Structure formats: structure tokens, C-alpha cells
Length: 385
Image 1 (cartoon, rainbow, N blue to C red):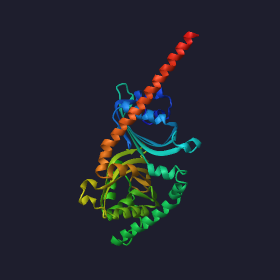
Image 2: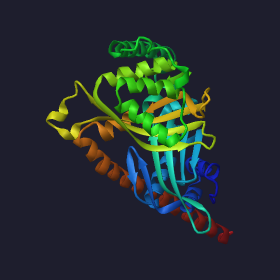
Image 3: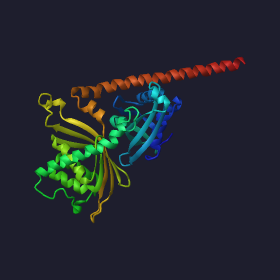
Image 4: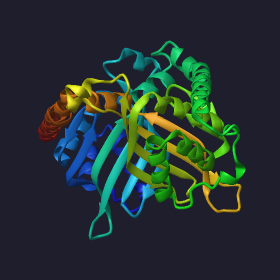
């Protein structure tokens, strides 16, 4: 396979690598679309070259007897030669009997693919990073594993929680605000984003580092009146309630900040994907006094922003849907367990990557050897006849 299109060939290549059960075809495909020194980042392993990456994929294919990939969104960044993909992966594995009876395992993933262009114009992968939303996957798309408690929580409990958070957050703001009419949205302030990257960086800086008044003004200018905010544990509607829910969370912190790790815009400018690392210093979180390596708390968030044109004279786009998909397990293991997080990130993941590579390549070598024996046996059989 040869890749030329970021939007079409790249997702198709990943689908083929994941879903094929022809081990020779998988090897040929990986050799053709991945660079020799490709890096493969995953919460549970770290691979540094194509041989190791192939070993991981070979092992993954060996203990799954059925894999399906459904793409939710594919956003190519032609300037950076990068593709950001949100997908749902459905698998049936040998060691989970319930997957044999039409109850597969489903996972929501965010995949970041870095590429480079070869001299012949073809594209090859230089880095792949797989981020799995474990908590959301369990609650939302694996109902049998949670005995339908997960879907019930997502449908009924989240709106109630969001309403409570918004009321408390707005009450906190009302106590510190000198403006009696602060709760009323001001239409003239709905200016939206003119320059997506610059304005969004400023908005995030204010949202996590500014004071309550700056956050209020930001929420009124950047969100549509009926905007929707979706979080793993709550949902709210309306920019006034979005401000309230966010204000409650920030009010619980002694200090907070956020750093943009990645920002990719769709060509239509109606969809933006942002990866953030949010850092928090809660009032009741004091380990930093005796163990600075343990602070601050950090959360990795994959943000999906749906935008539309602002209803004002000034050109710009406002947010109509804001989704925060939190990488809870990755944040815990890699950022919030003090020195163990560093040890796990730099040492344990690397050792697991090497182990997976050895196992996967051993499986391939065994299959190749058995295939050669079969070919030799069939040749001898044909000679005797």
C-alpha cells in the first residue's frame, strides 16, 4: 500500500494494519507505511523502531480473532503533516468468553499520527500515539460490563450533576461579583474566535489562569447562548451554566493552569481538536510541601470543539458544543503518582514494549517456520506422486 492522501489513505492504512489476520500481509504493510525508526507510544508500552511496532501489532492480532474500526472523526493537518483520529475499536479476544457470543469489547481511542514525505511523494508514519479513554469506554459503550449502570449514569445522572455544579459555581461568582446583572448574557460580547489558534490559546489561559471576572467575560464571548458542554461526569447547557460548572471546579483550586499540547483545525474551521494538560494545586493537596516531585495534580484532556458563525457584525466563530474527554488512567499513571509515574513512564513502558516485541516477532517467526515446513512437505508429497 502507498499513502498519498492524509484524509483517506492514512486512516485506511491503520484499518488494514489492525483488522488483517493475514500475518504476511501485515508484515508487508507495516514495512511499506512505517519508517524504520518509527516510534509507537501507548500507555502500556513504548516502541522505538519498526520491528518493535510490528511485534506489538502481531501479538495484538494473534489474541484477537476479530477487530473492527469505526472512525468518528479524521482531522488532517497538512502544514505539520499530522493526522488526528478519533475512533471506536471493537474486538473479540480469545481469553474473554463473553466476546464469543456477540458481546465484543469496545474502546474509544484518540490516535495521533505523525508523517513525513518521501522523495517519491509517498507518505510514511514516523510516530503513532494511541490514547485510550478507559473510563468513558467502560461507562458508555460497554453496557453489559457495567450491567447497564454505565449508560444509565451517562443519560440520567450527568445532567443532574451538571445542574448542581452550575448552580453552586454561579452562586460562588455571585458572592464575589459587584455587578448585579452579571448572570445575564450580553449579546454584544459574543465575538467568538477570529484567529483560531491565537484566540483559543488566550481563552484557555484565561479559563485556567485568570480571575473569575475574566472567565465570565470569556465564557460570554466565546460560547453560543445555547452551547452544550459534555464531560465524563456531567453535562450542562447554556453558556451561563457552562461558566458556573467550570467556576466551581476552579474555585476548589489554590492555583490552576493549562498547556496546549496539540491543536488541529478542520479545513471548514467548524471543528477543532485540542489536547491539553491541565495542572491543579488544590487547597487540600499538601504533599508538595514535603515532596515537590508529587505536585501538581495533572489531567490530560482531549477537547472537541464544534463551532458556528457568531451572530454579530464582527466576524468570528463561537462554540456550540464543547466536549472534554479526560484520559483518567493515563493521567493517574503518568502524572499523579509521584516518582512512580516517572519510573513507569520511562522504564516500565519501555520494558513492556520490548517484551511485546519479542513475543510478537517470535509468533511471526514460528508462523513463518511452520509455513515453510508445510511448503516443503507439499513439495515432497508432489514428488512422490
